[in-house]
Image 1 (cartoon, rainbow, N blue to C red):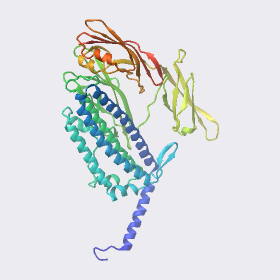
Image 2 (image 1 turned 45 degrees about the horizontal axis):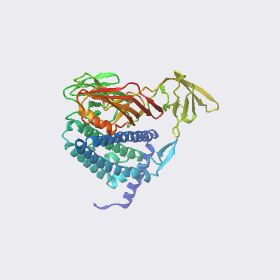
Image 3 (image 1 turned 180 degrees about the horizontal axis):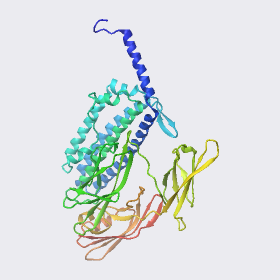
Image 4 (image 1 turned 180 degrees about the vertical axis):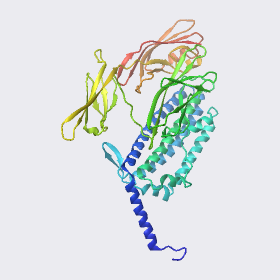
Length: 523
């Protein structure tokens, strides 16, 4: 054979060897690994849903602030819109690739009540799409370009500290360690489920980056004058990840956005006070073994004039994993009346469909459709409600019959009353500027394990000027009426704002009057 020519028989032999190698690799991808990728993909998809919900709240807050202070908010809201447009475009492009992999490997099918890829171990589609057809290099350029565009937007905001925000921009392409291209290192001989999971991870980075930047933009509004009625606790994951591998370092900065540099806030996590320096506390989490970490915390700010404490709750959660991150559900030992209490039941060695559970004390235990092993426990609130209930578990035996395998006691608690707020305050002093921008009465149930949203149905507003006769106005719903806002348009020193007879309701919780009142003095 002369130099520069190809022997057809030799080339056919090479092609045949490649096919055999591919088949062997496909056979050697264990079911456990494929299942782990599926579990991680589902977990990250749920995380994206949570981030999207939080992002919706952030944009709602932009809209509310635009109504009250459009001049101060307009530029920040416009930059948030630009961030959304840029991130949504890349997210949709990645979604096209995800669907293409799924479609070209046979689509989806139902297994044990859950959607799975039909051919999750296919080794041909992902390398062809992202290496042979060059889409991996194109995606790398799009990710890097999007990151540069987002950084350019952030650099245009003088209120944002670039050294602090850069680690929160998690969307990036890491430099390959093997000396190969990112596309080859990421997609060569990758099974289809792993390719889909990698793309889902990129989508999660897009949404995380989008949320972090928009949170920073929202926190920058009024940062100089500290006049806005709501402050937002921020957790900055300095490692750039919400999930880390065993042995890796997990580090997060916890701080109050727009904090006052003239005083240090107090920061608590899981009941323990953290050391605060330059307005922030650094938390270093354990990563010695696979686990899920999820704790409540709060940032406490003291009014320098009155000594009144204001608390801002937050939640810190991360996962440590051997394979990619897997999110596990938390256990409960309390059932709250009138609420849908999620209960997860499993017995090692038995399928969820072979498990049956009962509950006493007048409570009900209903299986969740399409989710074997998941139940909803519910108990109406009444004067004769029990102090605790018992859930008993039995299993079907392979040879017939059933066996009782255990029980668990659950304490019964009534949902506590929430607290009404006028802006960010319940009592004490309020500045004229803060009094003017408040548009509604809110109700908060703090440090409660359920995401229970209350809505004010009615209240009585009393304005007692320092000189003059008090005026009482009834309000329907949470919003202040135009007459109320007119009284607050130019409040004078020592005028009093009193909110009484506040009624509120929540899903499962009937409309009722809340105890106590809001009493504020203009200073």
